[in-house]
Amino acid sequence: MNPAEVLELYEATGGLLRGHFLLTSGLHSDTYLQSALVLQRPEHAESLCRQLALAFNGDRVQAVIGPALGGILVAHEVARAIGCRALFAEREDGVMRLRRGFAIAAGTRCLVVEDVITTGGSTREVMRVVEEAGGILVGVGALIDRGGGSAAFPVKKVTLATLSVPTYRPEECPLCRSGSPAVKSGSRK
Image (cartoon, rainbow, N blue to C red; front, top):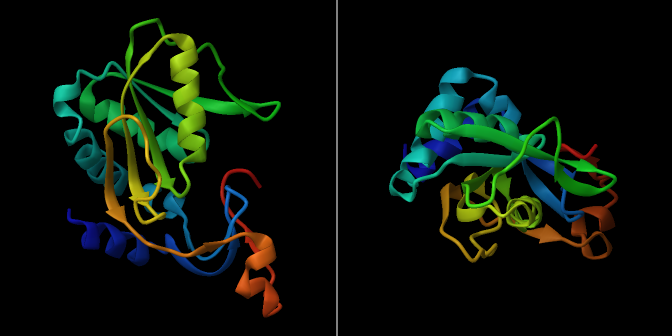
């Protein structure tokens, strides 16, 4: 699947939305990617995540970890394609942590995955979880980079498609100025 086909799949499943949205990062945008609508179909989740996993074939990944909620299915399917464990981190008192008995042993080679990267904030939080546990970060992967590739990481980064979607700080948002209310989507509702 090439990048255009990935975006076509998002559109066909209703996962590419237009309007006025408050993103997880706190920024506003006229475009929102609702990956859950794509990933609700196991065949789509499997094919997208298998393609993402292929990019890390030679990296000897031992665990795949994503942020709750959007990264859980992606981590699971990528881990299945690689043949390793799938974990997720979640917020507890506002801090991303491993919970539910999950642990990363020192030296474990970890891949951090996400459904959509905008600023990379959630991904960096999960990277910190891996580093604090003594894991080795081998890469970052996402189905879509909606930040036009601007989120940089000190490890290999692979995305299946990239969009350059403008985002705005709330005080500078032209959609707010026009009177349009922002809809809060995503996993931190």
